[in-house]
Image 1 (cartoon, rainbow, N blue to C red):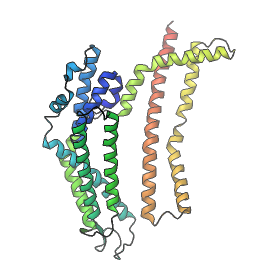
Image 2: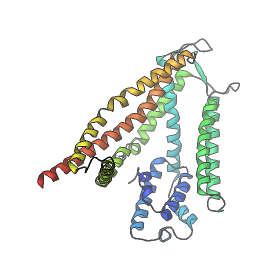
Image 3: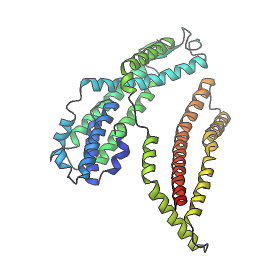
Image 4: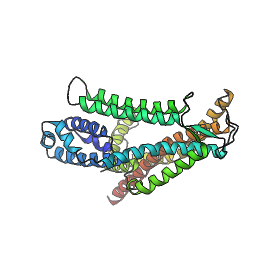
Length: 351
């Protein structure tokens, strides 16, 4: 259940769901690492689902004072969990810096100091914006979480939706502050050679994965696996509904009665058509990216090859991440339907 609790929260009734959301927001405001948060909330969801099936009210688990339950629930979070949270955050920033540095190696461009590329001693970066942005964003995150914890149980005039929106807004503003500070000009406190920044980034990521690798390698349940299980459980009922809808359409159009065998043949052909759509998922990002690149070239949007490479990498990365994930779900659905079709045909042959 851990690493996938969000997928199952819709199985909670309104009473349990409201309480679970409040506890989740409180735990998220504790600044603990994502791995521990998912594990603990997954365990709590298991308890809630079990109690809900037995018809017990949620107060039998949490008591009448939810704030005290939350404090107790979070009491065993240690400084180690918070250090992991900070380490994960810096690792995300280090990955971005590593990616940008690699682009500078592959596509070196002259800088203002006359250097060329990351390995030139004259090439440097002003770290002031990075450091100030990280400090401001971190302080904003701490302040937002402290405010949320103080008011979420103190007054009923502030709804959970408002508190969640405030938490999300704090995170978004924090990231915007970091990226805005990165482009700061006029404050030159920490000037660092690009090659040194690249070396520090690589060293941090190496140490991070050595120390946190075991924790990060823990087997996670993928979203596609959860969909497979859900589709397998609900497919027979959904196909029966689909058959009844198709049968009513046949009757309205005066085509007579739609037999079960004909419906199965139609579903088989639909699976074949769906599988042929894989070419769309594979090649559409390339076409869309090419169109975007041409359009940007026409608008004189690229200052050099590094900008072009970063633009293409981001566009293709986002599009392929979305479309290939979607295709994996579509392909999984087709596989489940074909298995169901085989079972239904075997039933017909046995009659």
